[in-house]
Length: 521
Image 1: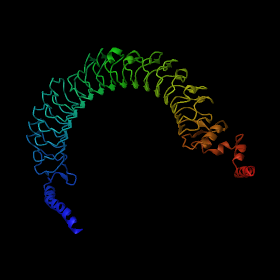
Image 2: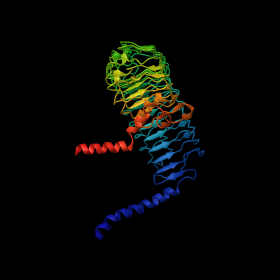
Image 3: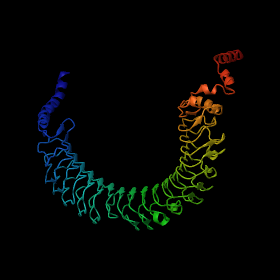
Image 4: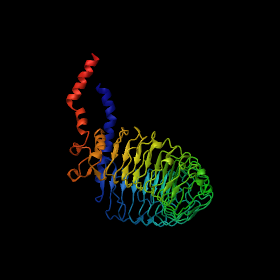
């Protein structure tokens, strides 16, 4: 047995003997201003006022962090003695110039971070030698232009971040050679066109173009997500999205749009998520939705929509989520929601509804969540949610000025309801809700509940629930702050309390057990 073991251990021991001196030498070479973790091959030289790359960094280093120094210029072949580098961080180094061939020899580098520097241009061969680079961060520089072929050597690049620069123009060959590009971030510039064909995510936030012209994004057949937030967009011209047949996400939030046409959205038939928050829509752009047969989620929060009318959702038959929070809606007409039979989530919170739109909720067999918080409802009438009895799981009625809830307000809502939010209303009395037997959460906090005999049915119901309930007595003063569920003393003088207690005495329970045994015998 000793022979085979020694034969296998021999090469291993020899390898350790050969590598040992190299590691010890690497550890001794660690620059005085740096911290070297040789076991992980990491070196950090942060904020040391370095004006050049230290020459004694261990050769086997894979991750080098130089952020926060004063390098100003990255000279040719600055890292030629570090061929194993995979991650290089040069953020906040005041870099004004990257010389041609600065990164030659870094054929294994995967991430290069040059964000938050003072680069106003990149020489044509500044990035040569980075054939394996997958991510390049250039955010927060002063780049005004990109020369043709600047990124030509980066055949493996998948993510390019050029946000927060001063770019106003992209030449035709600016992204030549980027065959694997997937994410391109150009937010906070002033650009509208000239992007690499393989892009999947295009971020143009904080650019400025009041009108998106026809065929604004030619060649982007692989685009999945388009970000146009905060661009001052007031119009999408007909055909603006032409050719974007794979687009799933379109972000047009925080613009000046007051309407959309079907012609403007044609060309993106797979669009599933349309974000139109904080624009100037006075009504749901129902006609435009006919161009989006696969629309899953429509976001119209914080506009000035004042009503939901029949026909608004006539073309939205695949819609699952409808966000209308923070508008001025006073009415949801019967039949307005009917075409969206697959609707699962309806957000109407923060509007001006004075009653639950019960008739409008008919014909929504899949609705799981209803948000009505922050509407001036004041009262809930009998059968307010009856059309949703078979589907509704989560109901939000908090901060709605509720003063009164009818005993049958929740009739029809049975075991399916899992959560009921009634906090921060003006409820002094609340009926028992025995049908809601499967609740996992009920929140009654922030209501001025008056704990007297009128509240006895609620006390009994809450006592039977095996969950934590945020319901406390506000009056009378003797029980202020006590939990309704635990304030038994205040209810003991109420009619029916003694009879109920008698039914629960241990003697009566044991007698019932004996009677059952005799009957079985």
